[in-house]
Amino acid sequence: MTPSGLSEWMADDVNVKEDIFTFIWDGSEEQARLISKKRNEFIKFRWLEDEEDGINSYLEMRFEVDPMTKEVVFRLTSFAFEDELEETQLYWQSTIEELRRVIGA
Image (cartoon, rainbow, N blue to C red; front, side, top):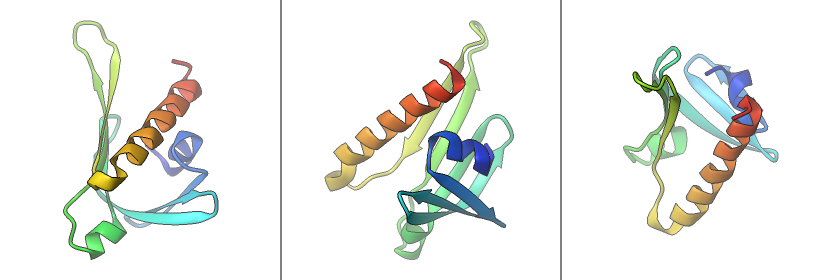
């Protein structure tokens, strides 16, 4: 997943400098550190705000190919505080719908 690929469906724009990704939505920015990745399999981030607050959370996007059907499965792991859970779920539902639109699924 490249910054330009992520900006097609996840944010208005995404910039990267070393291991820090800056996600831009409606003029506001959030930064995340790249924790790990494997080309064409997964990418894992930690939001800098969480890192600074000592919160051990992460955002992981993983693509898996079913060995029998050859279908690609997208798995997303995102942490949220209980009072933000509904908003976070709605955000990811609409964001994944945008990804489906972009890839023609």
